[in-house]
Length: 196
Image (cartoon, rainbow, N blue to C red; front, side):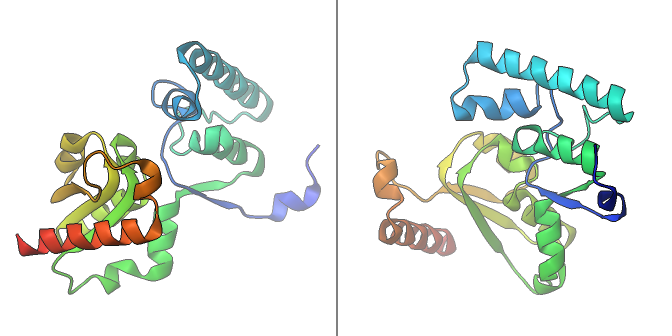
């Protein structure tokens, strides 16, 4: 039973990824292994999401299975879409609009962005991909910094001018995350990039 007041409410959900509810790019296959799920667990979770999507479709008439962002937060995006009539928007889009980002970068020659780990998921609606999309509209090159990098070729093919790790080889995660070490490593990486 849904509270009647919800019918007059409008919900906008910020999603940091555009993954569908289930399937090879869905919540279980993409995010569950990061949380410790093995292959068998992932398959069971994905089957559960498929079943839940069918229950939602049968109950509400809404097919959330392949809606972009439905797989965000383990399928929470799809659930909010189904039960609250929420509008799913990329979180980065909401943030860039609120900051008037496109106007703020008009005279920029270069943009440097970053995140803890850069990989193919970076291109699935995360902050650096949103910044890249806005910068490309104005032909501004974007460099991506990260503590750890995977899928470097894919990131560069997406349009990043360069993808750089801020950490030297063999540094422990604990050491790399110490604020003074991270600050020093970022500064040295940026200085090195700017000298090129």
